[in-house]
Image 1: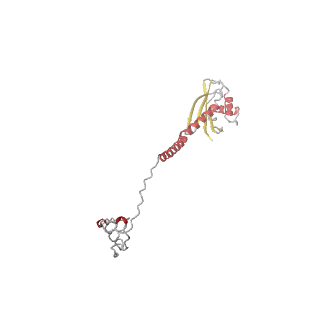
Image 2 (image 1 turned 120 degrees about the vertical axis):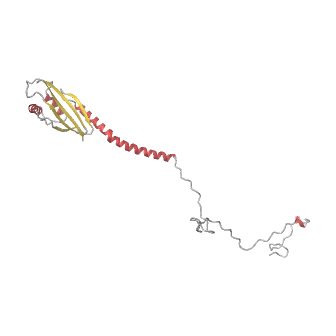
Image 3 (image 1 turned 135 degrees about the horizontal axis):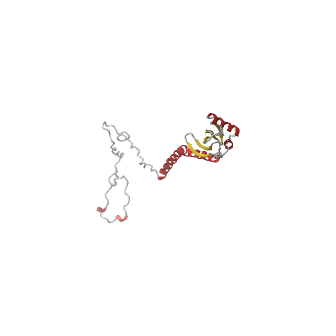
Length: 240
């Protein structure tokens, strides 16, 4: 509502600015239009996506409803090179661990045990006057078998065989025999052809040991002629 002076805002007009004196009336600014009264008109609703059945798409409010909060997209996590190296290191450790255990059980341990048996047999050596003719390692049975031989011509041998065997057995830890026992054993074998000396068993340096003799010496008949060979089979078994 304007006042009688023509001011559209309803306030009395103040004194004119001194610079306005003498200016033509056409220079005066036009009066401002009246400011509309009443509530501000509502903004038109934002159109919402609708399904064919007329219902709003899930996740979107209906017309005129509050707008859902949309967070800024989160970039996917980027694995650094350090993670790749860690994974590779773990894989290498697992492969080496499994392969190392399999190699130890399947190759290194049998090889090492066979090496230890060979060293023990070499350390013991052959009976005096006997010659080593063969050596065989059986990894499956964990046994090393060595054959020693002595050959006599007629009734003459290069050594006193019973004494030589006795000294060798003592070195190998068998101390419950004497030269007479060994001589009688070989004599019975020569007389009857029986395996009277084939089952000497004991333990030496942790190994299972078995000694057997094969062949015969001319002990029963000093006048015998020809060559006679006596073999001593030395079996060195597992160590416990």
